[in-house]
Length: 125
Length: 107
Image (cartoon, rainbow over all chains, first blue to last red; front, side, top):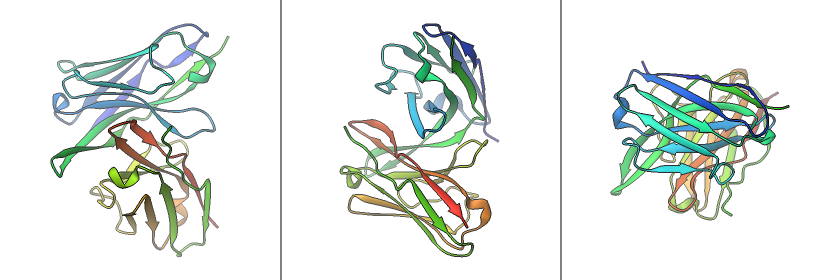
């Protein structure tokens, strides 16, 4: 059974930093990309960051570029999101998600097939 | 910037069919996924590659793509289907994009 467990959320002041971690089990972690998706209160889902299976390729939403970094440890089966220079509009529930993949017409096709329960990040003074 | 447009809300009576659309000018070049997000729960993958269902997803959830519009259809809608629904694409230019979400109300 695939399990994803986030940790590290909490209250932080504007300008501060926080590191989220996601512990994965139930699948061959090194073979899959992982992502972080957030939901700002009252808003929809936003893909914050994604990292490829081997960690060599990353994606960041424009809203977090230059402030957030993502890392993947294929020995510990964890994926971390380092969040710096946090702003009030980063307040959200952050979900860790496993990236599934198919090859369609010779091209990769991705989707988030498993999600964690989420961890709340509150940026406030 | 590239956007995926969904209706903010859809209402349906129990037992009837609900249809939720997702439009975007590059949708025909990308495959769409659909997620269900109930309050207080994690999002759940309903449809991938436009019309494929993961194991465990009931057959009454179906997806289609025509032109630049993806559609999620929920047949024989139940009260438990009340949730927010999101389309999503992995696009080579914008990479990962969600639609704005549709709140489904089962009256």
